[in-house]
Amino acid sequence: MIKRNLLGSVIMVLFLAGTSFAQESGEHSHHTPSQAAIDACSGKAVGDSCDYTNSKGEDKFGTCANTSDNQLFCKRARKSS
Image (cartoon, rainbow, N blue to C red; front, side, top):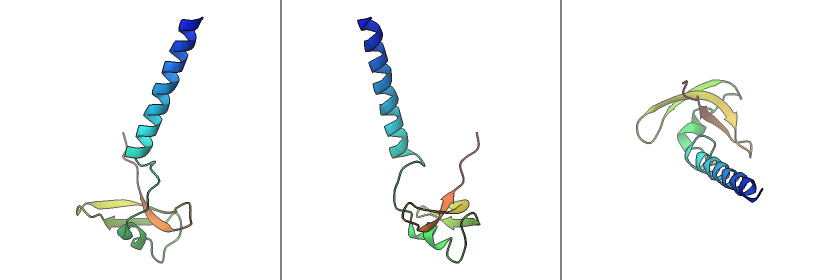
C-alpha cells in the first residue's frame, strides 16, 4: 500500500514538473507579445490572418488573438506534426 502511494506521488510530481516546463518553454507561456506581433494585427479583428518578422528576422504567420488583458496580437500558428 505504501509503495503504491509513493509511486502515485512520484508520478504526480513528474507530471506537474513536466507541465510547468512546457508552460515556460512553449507556446503556452504567458508573456507579453512583441511589438511586431502587436503591430501585425493593427486594424484587424480576432481571427484575421496575420504575419510579422520577429527579432531574429524569421517570418511568422498566425491569426489575431487577444491577450488576457485584451491586447490584440498575432498568435503564431502551431507547427503541424
